[in-house]
Length: 200
Ligand code: GRF
Image 1: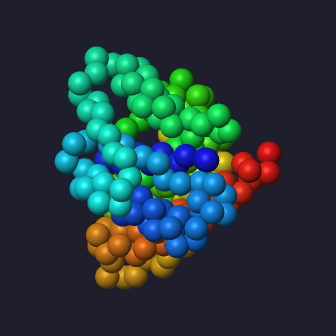
Image 2: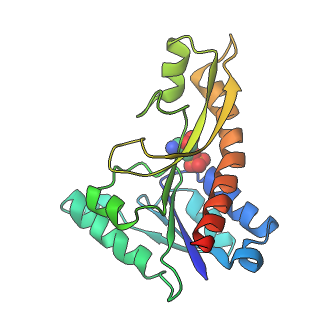
Image 3: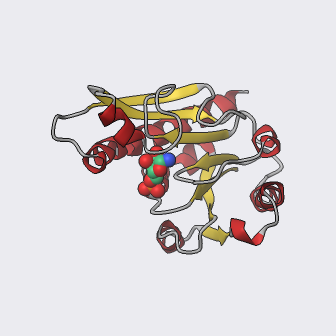
């Protein structure tokens, strides 16, 4: 069994899209892959309740309870690595997880740690991507799924989706348009990566 661990900090709509795709497209039967756990650094992340309602294991690791970033990441690695199986290490999916991870964490999961970022990387790494795209006069915006490397919001691009920026757009309306595309490309990119990993 290949275990997928999803890390969230909030609403978890990408996480829900991935869980639904895994069910609809029968990832368990076809690839032996399942979303095994959803972990949040915030106890009030609403996505946790949704995941629990789907019968998925959930865990909260409050980063404020740890003395350092390294300590937090070490604890997180321990929880995630409980889901390693004899056949394969877990696939770690960042879905609105609002923490910068240490180089040690990133190296530990190299090649099986993914993120989705709400811009067309390499444009607009970091926060407030939609407001920045509007302020720059961009005619198009979008989202990027990428493998995580030590540099924030960089790393090999696995998928992108493009949406128009409309004249009346606010950061919120643009975010909604981008988010609906995120829900499409993230599960697709994860499925492709699982297929690739199975062939190795
Ligand atoms: C998404 O726009 C994602 O790209 C960004 O944070 C948002 C998370 O939304 N990193 P959700 O929690 O998946 O609903």
